[in-house]
Image (spheres, rainbow, N blue to C red):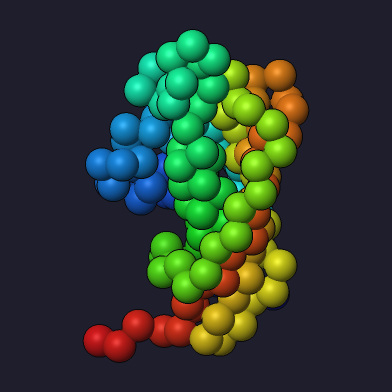
Length: 141
C-alpha cells in the first residue's frame, strides 16, 4: 500500500480541472480513497454521436475509463500517469445524462501499474468498463 497520504478530493479536483479537456467534460470528484476514485461527468449535448438515437459517443466513454483508472493511481503516485495500454468494453448505449465513473488500482508496480474503471449512466446502469496499464516509474528530473 501507499506510504503517502491519500490526496483529498479537493486536491484531486483542483489538479484534474487544470486540464481544459477535463473542464469541458465537467469532471467532479465525488470521492477519493487509497487506490480508488469516483468521478462524475456533467452531460453535454456535444457528446451525442447520433442525433436520431441520442446516445453518447464511445470516445467520451473511453476517455472516462482512461482518466478514472489513471486518477485512481494518484493515491500512490501523487500525480497523473501516462497511459501505456487501454482496453474498453461497451455494454450499452449511454442515453443523455450525467455519467459516473468508478476507478480502482488492480496492481501497483514501480514501473507499470494496472487500474480499471466502470462508467454508469444516470440510471446507474453500466455503460462501459475497461482496464489500463500506466507508467508509474518516477519521472526523471
